[in-house]
Length: 303
Image 1 (tube, one colour):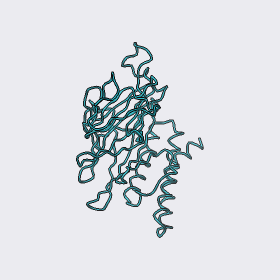
Image 2 (cartoon, one colour):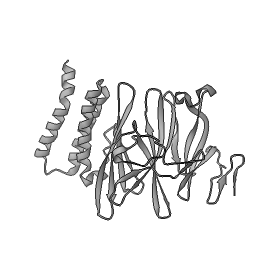
Image 3 (tube, rainbow, N blue to C red):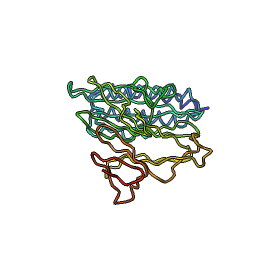
Image 4 (cartoon, one colour):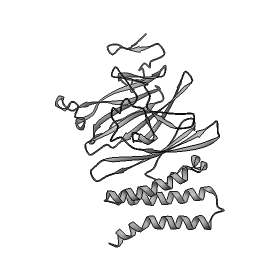
């Protein structure tokens, strides 16, 4: 009982301590205040980790969201690492123009909900804008082919950003993970671009996959296994495990899908990501597609 009361009191203590410190150390560096935010976030994420009640997790998460929102609205936060906050994902674009902050809640029924912010530098105004991301993945229809925004984001934890440019357009490709539910996990390849005002726009018809054009790619597989999805700088391709069911009766039942120990890939050409099947990244002589090359599954790369 004592522990329960202590945990419920933590958020109040955090806010009181933060407020007092702000008064006592108002002349201190900005970095001091970010360290205070880090301490508060670390405590709240720990409380969520040990908490069993979904309603209480949401209350702690509301405090997390408020602290992060306030911190990010200070432009100096863009260069602050926040590296002591273990459960907060931080990812900066290769050109240092924007940064993603993502995290999730795991509920008692095994489902996940995602939260995030994107902080974008506007060159034309020499300032930062911050957008809060709202996970609506549970109600998004035709998720492969819709354009999404901050208010109806397909939630995920992003772990890699790939920058590509074609015909004066810049494409940022995001690789992400989604815990989904008790039975399956998902990996996601997403596109993000920004409007003139810095508003994030998710999804673009740049994927040629399974003879179809898509705005984003999903891979779903058994929660009992793992899937590799990563960008390979040497070959300049996105390399990923080929997924298949353990037997034919498992077709389209993704809780039975896993890697069959082969790899496929996507390479970027003329503003599109193109699929290549059966690549062997362990082979030092593997041929990489060049401009005006196409892939024939029955042969090597041919011109």
